[in-house]
Length: 356
Image (cartoon, rainbow, N blue to C red; front, side):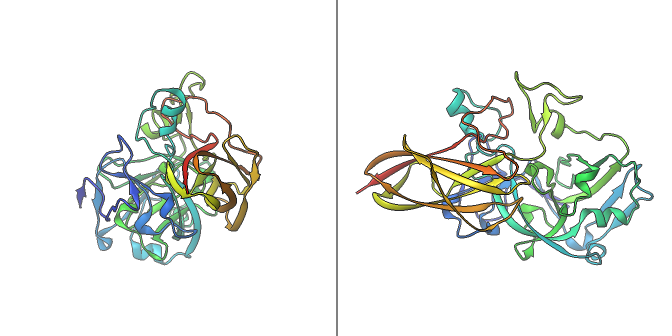
């Protein structure tokens, strides 16, 4: 096994933006160039914490271990292929998506890669249920934490509670949009944890520990937490460990987009962790909120595409968008500061220049 410090797939500027302080392994999708509901593999954002492992499928092994298993097990790809195959359409969104807007709102940047709105994508993930894999090793009734670990150079790992690990749609994905997983997205196997922050969907999966006790790591105690003056510490964590992602709306435009004046159709997407979007509303400048049309499909745990036809007068405008889900969650007018700059989901604002 060898490691690559960057990203393997081509990164044309028309498809990607590099977030400030993002490092060599982070790029976000330009939402303005998405062609349909699913995010094509070549346009899917990339977030990696450590150097990427170059793995051979024939040599890959998944080790199941821990005191809440009846036996330790090592599985090959051929072993996984013997299990029932499933496919789920789900979003993966970095918890730091939209982090750059903390600087706009608070006058200071939160720590981490300064993503705008493109650290998110929706794909069809095909593979096997995590619970079916763990069942091969016999899961104890008092199992508490499941700790997946990647084969990247830093062995990234973040725990799941046992009920989320055994959920019907928690998947070990072997394919993405009908193709073998690209190396940037976890080849040959990755976890897909529906509705949770992207860090839970560990890439280049190599080891899973099932424990009767908590198996916390840096990534759910010192990062990927809501920490700061308004968030109390929880146990070992410096704040509240992030799990389900909040409701969020996106616009299929680059900021400061130039559009023709006159009757114009605006488009975007909205998503909400494990929930389903029920409403999207838009407002131009100081005008009234208008209900956008929601299109099919509208998949819980993924997103829905929306559109709105409006009249754009020549000049500069600000488009505001807010979404609501079936659990009563909606985007707030403003955010509460958190030190790690996670889970930004205040009403979305995009600047538009309308020209004759």
